[in-house]
Length: 380
Image (cartoon, rainbow, N blue to C red; front, side):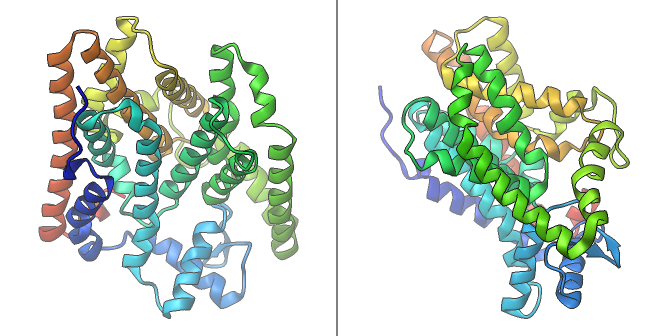
């Protein structure tokens, strides 16, 4: 029986509730000197020295990140005359809401009320997703563009796409790269083919990664790299394209971790949702449930990305951020399927537990933001 729509089911209502709960943290916390303050200093140095494409920190090359995020920080200072931290925090929170909105529009038909709430609050309350929605970093922006690219692919794959999607897909991929770096292309380029292989439909790759995609990426990346070469020379370009990519992937000079690092990291990075999301997925696999195609897509993309990132030398827990949404929404769809197959009570219990756990984390963040505004410094 279809559930009647309620105010609590409205995405805008839930987003407004989350914003209200996070407001004390957004207004009162201290910036972390090793990460957030560094980005502001890089933007100040670029404005002072007239660098636009090449980034420097205290006179040293900072080719770790593409310039998109720093450009927005620079623009903010030019407009307001100073760094408005609250507005800069919106560069993370708004992409988080857009990511949730895209996933909800994408999966809404498969998730009735309580399961939609479970997916929303489990993802929003996940430790690293919540943290990335607050801090001044480009990870959530990259996650938003990756989610948009996956959604665009799915529309094309299921026949719901528009002609413009063939251009939007590579544009989202480029923006993901331009936000964070090569991590932004790994899911669209490496994980989608695995799904198509599983579905025995690899020929569809020609439509997704056809001449339009490669042409647009080549033009946009070519403009970027040419401008970097003109402004910073061959040394900076080499640092950007090779030292910060192959160097981190093969023998990392920062954040070098063992192969199994993410096997235990994901449990606390996705917590508290991981205590339910991961067991639900493992249970569904153990029971050999017949997964809907969208659940297959989410799980194959997540598993492939997990394996690829485990093989990369440089590892940070936040690198798993793009698959948190697919995992949470896949688990909620599996819970609904379990209910339809006769496991109604456990499914309802788990879905309620997901929503309550995520909501509790947000409430705790509200309390901590009021009484302990400097708590973020101990996490980053």
